[in-house]
Image (cartoon, rainbow, N blue to C red; front, top):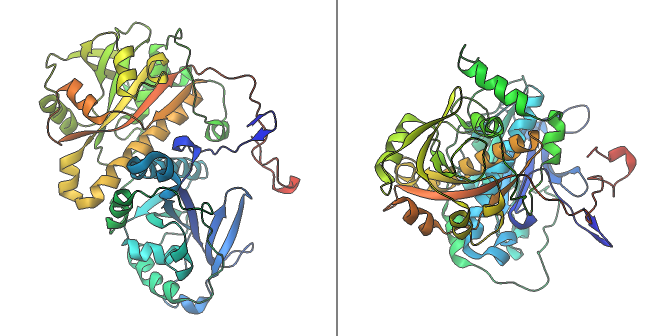
Length: 456
């Protein structure tokens, strides 16, 4: 984007404050274009940097059947501004990046498969445990994603086996840099929590959607299809933007809201984890033919049962069929604009949007089943659902904004949630964004030579 002499970069995947703590590394097999090795993605140059070559002698038992994406986070990029909440934002960002990568892979007929690894092995595969990283802000490993391009994929045992020789290798290239010449405020508690995660989150992406059920899903799918704008999928992936302000007079149609919520149903999209442990709470402000109020979309039978026992303030739920095949539960009819803004740190976007969401996670049960890794597991799922919302609202020709600043306890108090069975994880505004016409937009790679340029 450009405003006068100022220029600033945006990315296809969102990040709180446009700070982007995430880094992407790749393990690539040898092809005619490059040698096997560990590579780092340089976003600004839109190029891959080889950090370490992988001669065949390092892989005596196997060859890499396909690429592996390795995701990391530099916590301090967020923490200098957002303090302890930086931990949450890094994990949400990873969920968004997982969703964007999964969608891009699907366009080529490929499938991403998360691999659960010890963080020590994941750090060795990226090379971020080297001595060179001792003098800079810590970079933390998060996810390993095998990309199945049709030749098979590597598994956790093979990656763990590969980590030892890579960790001991001496041919690494690249020198990490500090964020700034002077140290900024460090948030030790957030750093301690990030360092305490010993393994990547045990997550499983949903499979490709099954065929529609005649008379139910096919009707809903037609409603969703009719609501979407005439945009190519690549346009949707690359043009997603967060709105900074919303038109409070805009009224969303029922079909548009259905198009946003239908992909969140279990099994309806690859951009979700299985089993579903995160459930949308909706503050509906302005949707055609829908009474304003607080609504729920439970994403599993178990989740609905849990929500019914834990949301104690209002027990008389009313079923509201949004469109055939998609039903919401009305928890409370009310003008929700003021409450949504107050809960979202007094942000105007939460009141001016047509719908504001709050994603609720099954907190205690997830930590009981996954240990401390359950915390990133829930936030990655919330970020993944957030990316689904971003892509679908963009496909409608409308706008969304992820809301990371909200009062957790206030949300719980409003709903009558006690204890830690459920936790508010992520907020989201959806509606018609207002554009500042003084801000112009350049090609994403206008600064690069023409042969490396990419379309908007």
